[in-house]
Length: 291
Ligand code: G1P
Image (cartoon, rainbow, N blue to C red; front, side):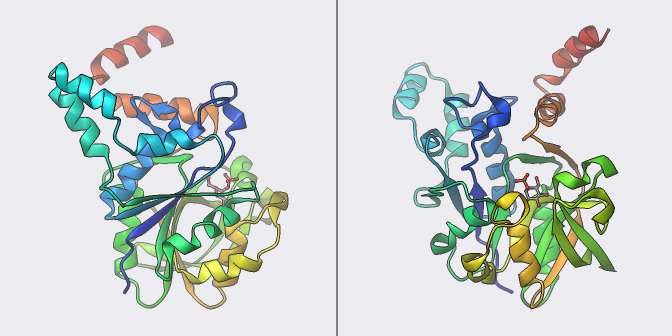
């Protein structure tokens, strides 16, 4: 089985739900505690063994590229001040030279189109796709859990992370149909993007982590607009599922939809409560606030 070495991060979205915070700053740079959202997701990919990080960006997103580069003046200042732990933190986060690539989605035509924009950088090999709006809090991370499942599958397999949501949220996501269980994963029998609740095949939604075969690119090439008029990755996966197996994994861990304000705020609280340096004082503050 071909190993998964590359991951795509679609980061071209406008982030209008977070205005005015995202007027001049990409939503992916909003911090969850003290790491930008995108850094959390890159951390997850790295833990899973990803070697090459492909960012599909857009206009006004140059700061993301800067974030994954050296900050020379800052390093000099930190050295002068002998701030060794900060220097170590920065160098630990830095991708090795040549392992981060950036390409632009020139028009906002949908998630499927964003993925297609990375086709030349991915080439003819399976890859991971991580949506930076979604954080999953767990060790090992969601993608690592998916990699372990993928390693046990034969042939050209695709793996999608799924989770249960209450009925009133189903229409906001891609939804999968559930077939036979095989070990930790199950066969996906169908997929539909943002169905009305009564037409959904289950209450299991696509969480924003995928392992996909490169044949998806050829399908995306001619994919027309789906839900919301956008070129949807889910529609391309439905076509690919006619010739390749799709497996769903109910991952361990709690997910946060950081594309919504409540999800983003909850992620900040949850991640702060996991930090030994912050948790005791933060818990005390929360108690006071909550009365
Ligand atoms: C996208 C996918 C959808 C998935 C969701 C997860 O939708 O199209 O299938 O369930 O991400 O967050 P979006 O949130 O971009 O509308």
